[in-house]
Length: 200
Image (tube, rainbow, N blue to C red; front, side, top):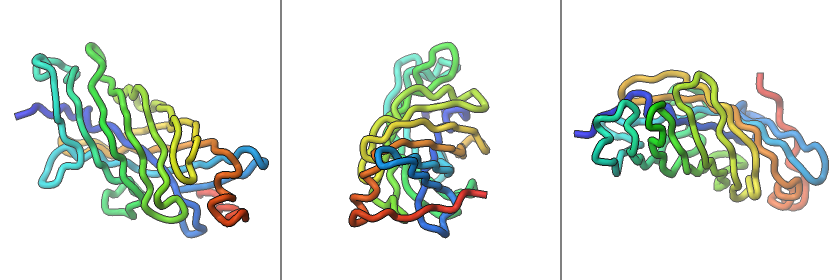
C-alpha cells in the first residue's frame, strides 16, 4: 500500500466568477489593454476515503523510504469551492498532476489547469506550472496562460493552507491575473460586463 504523507495534501488553488452575487471574484479594467482579475477560492486535495480526487500513479524505488516521498507522481481532479467547507458552492476543478521533487525538503512541482464551471468564467481555465514549497505557511505559484476569459493570462497565486488531515488538505488561493482587455469585451458582444463588487 502506498504511504500517504499528510503534507502531500497541501496543493490547492483558487479562482473566481464575475456575477454580482459572487463574492470570490473582482475585476478592475484599468484601460483598454489590460484587465486585472482577482479571485479567492479553496482547493481540496482528497487523497483518501471512498472517493479520492488525487491518486498516486507512479513512484521511484526509494519513494517509500524518503521523508519527502521524493519521486512520487500524483494525478488530480480536485474540487474548487467558494468557501473552505468542501460542501460549499462548487466553482470548478483543478486537473493535472504534481510530483514530489524536493529530495531533502518537501516541495511539489505542479502542472495543473484550473477549470471553472460556474458563472461568467464557466468553460474558462488558467494554468499553474512551477514549484510549490508546501511546508511554508504562505507561498506563491505562477500562472502561465489560459483559455476563454483567461486567454493569454499571466499572474500569480498566493496559497495558504486552511486545514489538513491524513485524507484531505484544504488550501486557500488568492489569485491575481492580468489578461488582454479586449478578451472580456469580445466574449460579451463587444460590451463591458460591468464592475464587480469588491469582496468584503
